[in-house]
Amino acid sequence: MATAEKTKIEDNVVHLDPAAEQELTDGFHLVIDALKLNGIETIYGVPGIPITDLGRMAQEEGIRVISFRHEQNAGNAAAIAGFLTKKPGVCLTVSAPGFLNGLTALANATTNCFPMILISGSSEREIVDLQQGDYEEMDQLAIAKPLCKAAFRVLHAADIGIGVARAIRAAVSGRPGGVYLDLPAKLFSQAMDAEAGAKSLVKVIDPAPAQLPSPAAVDRAIELLKGAKKPLVILGKGAAYAQADEEIRAFVENSGIPFLPMSMAKGLLPDTHPQSAGAARSTALKDADVVLLVGARLNWLLSHGKGKTWGDKPKQFIQVDIEPKEMDSNVEIAAPLVGDIGSVIAALNARIDGSWQAPPAEWVETIRSKKDANIAKMAPKLLKNSVPMDFHSALGALKNVIKERPDAILVNEGANTLDLARGIIDMHQPRKRLDVGTWGVMGIGMGFAVGAAVETGKPVLAVEGDSAFGFSGMEVETICRYGLPVTIVIFNNNGIYRGTDTDPTGRDPGTTVFVPGARYDKMMEAFGGVGVHVTSPDELYRAVSAAMDSGKPTLINAVIDPAAGSESGNIGSLNPQSVVKKKK
Ligand code: ADP
Ligand code: TPW
Ligand code: MG
Image (cartoon, rainbow, N blue to C red; front, side, top):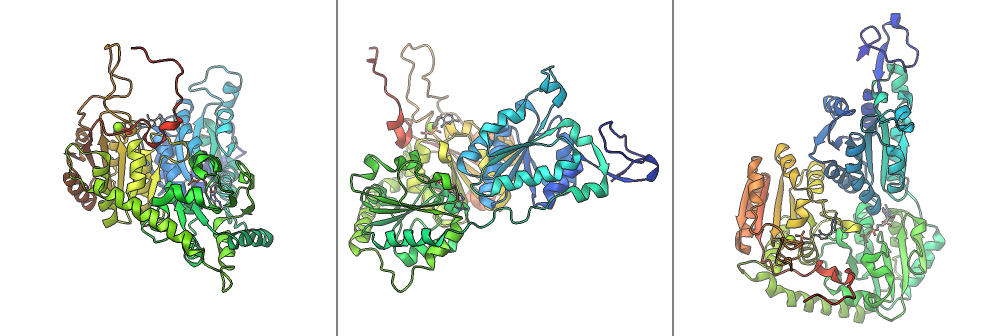
């Protein structure tokens, strides 16, 4: 704490009496105090002008500050911290270039409905607005606005408390999302009376208020479910985020309705649950007559609720979502249930009483037999101890690793590496599968791994395509530096989708291939971590098990047959096709 005597007071400061030995605070400390008051325990970022000292002081004041090598990864760590904790994850960056690097993560968080706050230092308003060429000049607020839920700028130290409070409430209330908070350099050294400063702080009370569905909406949904012959529940990552795990389990089990988890909702109920329709997805979607969506949007991942995926039999949708505008976004929603998932499912549970009848046995049996058949068909592919490995045999090994460590967190990105892992690796607990989300974005891997390890203290297994890993691979240094319990497995098939492309002109490597036989494990060794090179599923199983038991940062380079993958994983159909015939 400084006094007026000792502190050089900037000219933009509230009036102070130099004789009065007044206790002072400043913008730096007010930002830190405001975050701490609201339970923010960790900041993810990259230091530099004008926020270097903010990071140092935050660390000194007991906030955990995790410094990354690139802001996008820090932003992804913050975003996944938000998903895992229901508190906004905070990412701190420098101005223009650092801000822009963090912006991808902010936009991705918003798209995925993860609460996150990107705090960026910025240049002087007077110079930026006259475009006079300040250091890292950029109108950051204007640029951030269309890419996030809300954007705020604080110009006066006395407004920091309100600015931080608004950012927190905007991030977590209603549909969660990304928020931008712009803090110009001058703000940090603005001084003000310490007592007035403390009073200016705002503790956000009830940041994400419960939103109860109307009784009429609940009646409508229950009537529809009761009339269904082939009901289906789809659980999305909103349901995982809501942390209403027991309510959701009670609803599914007491209603007897089969459920289908979206990727990041896997484990909300175990994938091995008898009511899981995971391995009978196509049948479940095609044949269902009433579909209850819980925190899942009818976007591209659900084929917009129409077309071949959904078959030609009539369907009615019930949708639980906190965002009213989500209703009817793609097809008519027969029974909208607007509210928070905890409250809505509790209201539905109250109606699963003596009058409730389980869904027709024929429907439940159809799903079960389809599922059993699909699982049996897959089983031998997962057991092969082949060299070189294909995706199935390698994933068979990892499936066992996760089965034996159900509380470990699985981070997953790539194309084949993603799509096949999603189907093959069963999840057993909620919020343990973190992946590319709504955009199918590459580059979340190391940021998510760090965020998950820091927030939960649990072991993390990151299963990464070799291309996917490259987007955030430098953060292996961060993982080693903080000694995080992260095991990275690179599915190294020498490229994007496959490692077999060539340049038809013979001049360069093909556009989708990398250096063949690259040794990613050596990268880890460069920073004091453990590097392992494996070529068979047995070796892979042993190496991953040992790494996860040791808790030491480890990277396992798993050699996969370069010819094993398919173009774009399982979404090759989204590739546009040229009408021009291929040159010979
Ligand atoms: P998935 O990709 O798993 O299908 P989406 O990201 O498409 O999931 O959908 C998540 C939905 O969950 C969003 O529409 C969001 O508004 C909603 N949501 C998030 N949190 C809650 C909550 N606590 N209560 C109700 N809905 C929520
Ligand atoms: C930010 C396009 C989708 S999947 C992928 C790319 C580049 C990599 C696939 O190769 P990988 O997996 O990871 O080796 P595998 O097992 O099939 O070989 N830029 C961004 N996001 C996306 N989605 C892309 C590019 C893409
Ligand atoms: Mg690859």
